[in-house]
Length: 397
Ligand code: HSE
Image 1 (tube, rainbow, N blue to C red):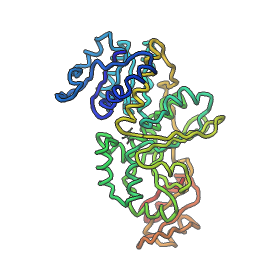
Image 2: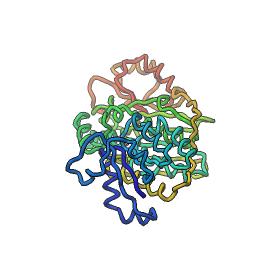
Image 3: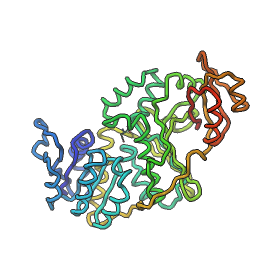
Image 4: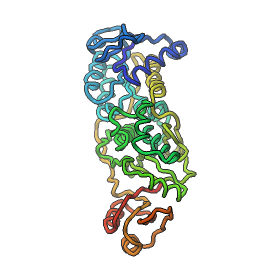
């Protein structure tokens, strides 16, 4: 099988490396050798052993009938979308690690692949090296999936872990994560929660079979989390994690991305560093947990190459993926119920006038109060919180 790789950055070069490191095992599993014929990139790579494979025009790949599989690791929606579309129209199978592309155009590209009897796969788009797309599409098909809650972003989990264990500053740990190749080109997508939001939208689309737009999901990142919040968390024997959740509510889902304070014994509290953890609850399965390397060059490339192997085995066979373009209207997050940890500059009288009886948290922070609330609707919390001088609030899991 001759393949092309579009985008020779961190993940693209990782795919080439994985195909080399495990060449024989991959050939055995795929039933034939897999050879990289082209690498598409705007740049030149003069000292790279793959230098002679570099091309700058994607039409070279489109027009070469020898190419059966194309790997898209460019990132971003355009020009990735245009290139992938043309590859599918030309009867080539495509695998991508690009969650921006999958979240925006997944349903359309799946349909296009089906019409051309090829496959569009995207295992690496969620959870890095952890298998989650194929399990949802192939293994958990007997269930109504009632909940998915996960740590879906390695960069922010790495940052929160370091901030909690070393008392490190936000900017320093972000730089470290970028240097290790975990972060997106623009790390705003990581720290503002957009990356997690696209990933939970992809997972929810797969389990409901319809288009979930990430723009419809409440998305809060970790930029407001400070060392003081982590001090309160420690006083409450809790960890702080950026969670992406999706819960079935009648005929639809309620989704949210936000930092949560979880009790230390919660399984997701033990998901540290760049690791991701994804909890899935099915109505007949019960609970399942997926855990592993959530970002980085080789783990993500491992997931891309698993798609290549699957597609070699399914040449001329479309693997049905239930994700239609018809949009699912999500239930508003404002109707969901949560408990909250709150920091305020108001006095106890003002707090209790707004919230009634609350539980105060003593963390030795001067000049402010910290307390936890009873469970209430998000809309109710917003009304009560407007009556106090709010410093920060974090949901309790
Ligand atoms: N920036 C992403 C993360 C890469 O940190 O999880 C993997 O999708």
